[in-house]
Image (cartoon, rainbow over all chains, first blue to last red; front, top):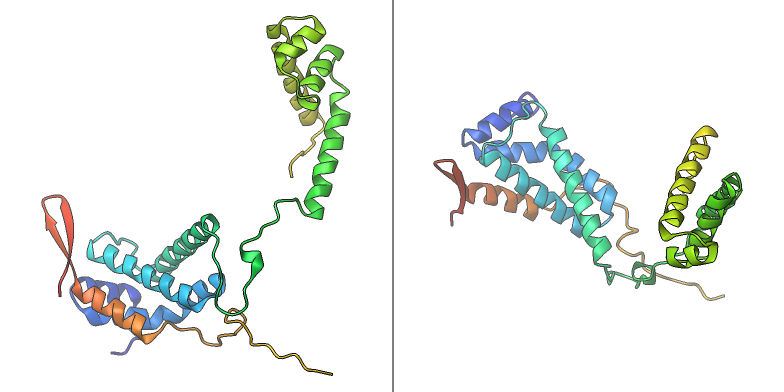
Length: 194
Length: 50
């Protein structure tokens, strides 16, 4: 079969009409791009092989069930399936850390460092110092409640006892403190994200 | 001075023209031939033919 002149859409139609060779032609035509894409993400031949196989199993099932309706866009469709399966693979691996026994044992595959890296720690410190400056602009009663709740980790019951106001008042002051903080942040166009 | 030799792990080996194995392609073609979708009313059933 001369594959270069036949379009993907036409091969898909042939396949849907029962010509199994058309599937072979489609796989032969696109196997390199699809497999390379998968391999470039997972860097493992066996896993690439599995994902490639699962990709085409999904393609075959969708086509045979008559659910394919992206005429003329066969390759992008298959690539999207492969992409989704690669993401699934990484999600699964995140949940189940893998012991890599092919070659040298890689201890970093099972050990993780939950601490922030130097850059993120710097950003976090900067944000915390910015927030500490911002809360100084709050009215005294709101500043007092916010400091006790956030920095001293006191309960609202303890705050109400210490400040001599009811729990509801303390809650209200906390609420207004947060609202006012947001207003100050918006007014100054600050971005406090890590 | 002693030389250090070590085998490259499989992850470091470069593949110039990555292609799936022939067995994988054959499996897919056979899977396709064996898979049959039967429609009954609004339901679709998959059957594998041996």
